[in-house]
Length: 325
Ligand code: SIN
Image (cartoon, rainbow, N blue to C red; front, side):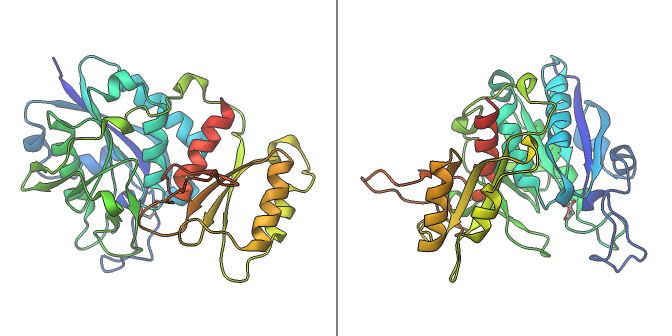
């Protein structure tokens, strides 16, 4: 019998404060604890119904500064709570800037068995908590509604009343409150007046696709995978500099994700350098820099492995985990 909902705080704008109530851009992220945010949230008890809640601060960062140490700690804490029989689901407050990366990372490392029964819901805000009209409180209430839904499964993201899957969600706007989008896939659901209107079932394929156990996440630096963009006038200089003899083993570049133009095409000069890198043993994955859709592969095997429909930032995570294995 589920008895509680767990909230894990990681920082972000949702926990940010500015000097004035009209300042929605000149604020400092990650100033308030998740406990403070919940204490100041009217209507939380009502939305929780009879459920108790437990809040834990796992990190306190502007999510642009998120890195593998915070990811590892977060995965450990989420897993700890997720496997408790009395925990219904988990809500994570997070910055918007790298929310899609953390969501995807968690979807790859948390135990499939539990993700198939419960939801891990990331939520956020585009305006700081000190704003005259902050969006964080409503986003948290919406996330709670999703976390309590009988059909919510896997790792999800909730922002501005829309529910997205970890695989498809991406931040597409630097300022609008409705800053997230799921591209061609579209959102999974909308939250309306506290009720979740599901459009699609939570994708089971996302749950534990290429499962990598939390326990196996390294405590040392994770394999270095860089992202390179192809563009008009691109050269191979950056790739060659990256692959030059490093100062120490932690700096060895093990993988490169190339965000190609259009259908994953790559400037010829950059292509030559990537070919050299691959010949040196660097893993190269080809994605597209287009916001919508993914690289459509033909019948011929490509020179570089395809990113399997993942955006460049998510392909990087998938490759890091693969290299860690
Ligand atoms: C952050 O990502 O932590 C800051 C920006 C935001 O949350 O909107």
